[in-house]
Amino acid sequence: MAKDFPTRAENYAQWYNDLVIKADLAENSAVRGCMVIKPYGYAIWEKMQAALDKMFKDTGHMNAYFPLFIPKSFFSREASHVEGFAKECAVVTHYRLKSAPDGSGVVVDEDAKLDEELIIRPTSETIIWDTYRNWIQSYRDLPLLINQWANVVRWEMRTRLFLRTTEFLWQEGHTAHATSQEAIEETEIILGIYADFAEKWMAIPVLKGFKSPNERFAGAVETYCIEALMQDGKALQAGTSHFLGQNFAKAFDVKFLNRNNELDYVWATSWGVSTRLVGGLIMAHSDDNGLVLPPKLAPIQVVIIPIYKKPEQFAAIADKAAQIKTALEKKGISVKFDDRDSFTPGWKFNEYEFKGVPVRLAIGPRDLENDTVEVARRDTLEKAVYQMTDIENKVANLLDNIQENMYQKALAFRENNTHQVDTWEEFCNTLENKGGFLLAHWDGTSETEQIIKEETKATIRVIPLDAKPEAGKCIYTGHPSKQRVVFARAY
RNA sequence: CGGGGCGUGGCGCAGUUGGCUAGCGUACUUGCAUGGGGUGCAAGGGGUCGCGAGUUCGAGUCUCGCCGCUCCGACCA
Image 1 (cartoon, rainbow, N blue to C red):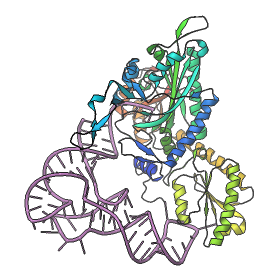
Image 2: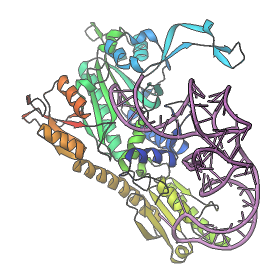
Image 3: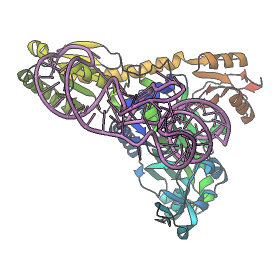
Image 4: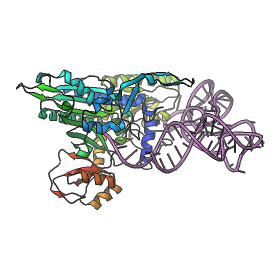
């Protein structure tokens, strides 16, 4: 249907890339690895932001903003943190340019060298904990529940639109607590919010659990995550919530007096989701005809397309469309009436289909006569003719139905692509031929995980929270194991 | 960093063993018709062929150097 557009089966990576560009979500910029997020793509991100921001605020968090730059010395305070991020930091060394002596442009002014280099944040734990030292004196100052919407830079070697870009947008929460227990609870509350958001808004089922030590965040005691499965059988980490213990409090000397008048280090969490979610949204639902967006995150939920020959017909249709638009908007539904005369109806049908608009209404002379409207849903591509009566409720129900149907479809896909494997041979075969999530026993050592990764490129995506205890043998070493973990190849 | 591919109107591409006025699709502008699944016809605007040097009567095409982009691997949300 779509012109010059590869199918998922032909070339999944190409399909994804072309989809992002042709659906006008984003494009590559003049800066290697950095994308320009275009209005339609940014609108999706804004909808995600709005939903998440409300969830954070409803659970007592407030937004704040910390600097883009971090003094280099901050990074060496927490040993494993610096180790994790050192290889991908952008560094600011000078603060001035001057005209080149040979008139060829501008050059860095060597006289304007910074005494201490500044790092463009790859994440903000260090600058935030350095700040928290001054904010926290007593248990009365706790808990401190802060979130920041920001951009960060990680100098990745290979990038892909939305999934991995050098600069990306995200939210990072940084909380401080009086007890270990309370910090762990916070980590779990956030994990719950992320999972809810993924399932109810993005219509993507996720597995909740822990990361293995190899995959743990640099500086964390425990990393919780939600893990989603994409249509090509690869896993996507969709959000992480870290219990940081007292690591950052110790590194930045953040102490408080507890109720017993004893000085103690503060307990910390950090958590984040990024514009990567937009990539996940695309990969989880879209098809060979283009984007498929869940109604709750679609920038345009309903598009109305007039079909007419004469100006008098258009006037009557426009009048009808305006009535529908008003009725739908009263119910909080975003509607676009595409009255452009420069494109034919067929062209518009394809355009909105490609852009994933959940519901399309078409109104022509025939409908005016019969008091009907043609309704097409994007998820199944089905068309039906509705009587105009009570149209706003019919469409509202349809949107709910589409949201639910997309979730069920994604859930069924995940279930069909989750395989229990018990031997090494089975593990390798399944990974090679089917992909997906592999439930397998693991002996719990980093060494084994590392070897499996080197041999198969599969990693432990998540140690599920709700896994039933089950005695078994590690698929690689045969050593005893108490529960299955989830392996997959990942983005 | 290792290995492939590519730089020609906005975008996607062709351009043969060097040859004459650099072409095609699409997009754009204008007009007429058309309009229930990417509409047709006609006219029109738009290009230092990535940059630099060389070979030659003549270079988009050959040689050398440089730059950029992109894909595949190790790294990562």
